[in-house]
Length: 465
Image (cartoon, rainbow, N blue to C red):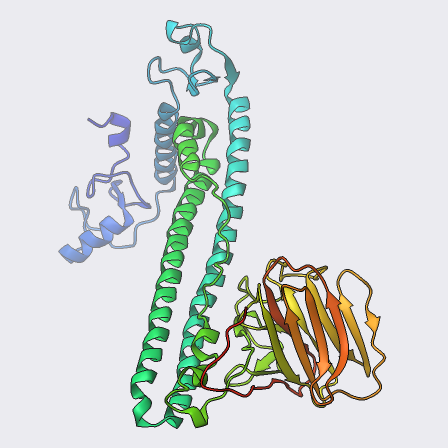
């Protein structure tokens, strides 16, 4: 039941504490909104209590309004104070038990429950635990930002997979259109393989993205809840400390998400040597190129031909920074690596004024400056040179301009040699004991393309030994 003082502060119409009270000439007071509603309903300006009529707008009862505001404030303060008292002794919580990890009053301190326990003043304990939570929060926030960045890269990769798939599909269609109707079965088989890979890799990226999305949502909820706890009063913070710490501990800082190797469409598998693989059906149209470029390794400044047999420098492209891609914007690798046998490929350099040809080890880090594992000859500023990192370059005394370069790799003998196929003239040979898979390496800073030349083919192909 309400106290007498509270009754005196209640509006006779709404029976609640006065809100913006006004005073009638009969000395009765009402909430302004209550009185306006009463008069509007009755259509008569009379007092709801004594029925005395009023001919003018009643003034605001400032004294009563101040009393109501003071009463409401005191009631809120009393409710808040009661929440911060010891539930057992109704005393203020001024100490924090380090053994039970909870706020206590001075009576609790001397009780059997806390015998031989350690205590700290409430403000000191709150300060220490606030700092611990703050540290955990910063780690979670950093983790959240990192996961968001990785998810963004995954989103870009997923989108690029679709772009690659559509572009590759168009190229495959272009070749099969030339082979006419009797190649429809072969075309359908290759399209099905592409779609299957696209579906598999898109589903893989979708699952990874969904996992990261759930982790972001969970981390965000934990960060938000922890931030709210940190803004709370000391005692309230310590009341909820165990729950707050449990939430933080439930979100262990796992290893950072890593980019997915092999996530992109293996374009070279679908396009490389496509016509050679259908040689038995269209021998006259078939051609074989010993090295197919891998667009998933290409730098951002490189543009490759439709069927990945030539490369030139062009405008910067937006591509995913996948693990296979070389960070040098002017480099690209062949799609197939070699760890045995002999292999040879001819490259037409023509009027290209800046190029390099060689091989790169599979294990070398493709991000940043390469310090080893790369053998190449280079043409730049009118000079030919041989580079074998980390050794210094060797200037090659060539007088005639080269139009074509033959690269010959004998992996077992440990020889990488270069020659002019037009004159059969030896240019340079690197010797090294190879232990790793080697990929053909191409570099160009010119708009004139480096063209990998097709070789003569027969019905059978001798396998490398």
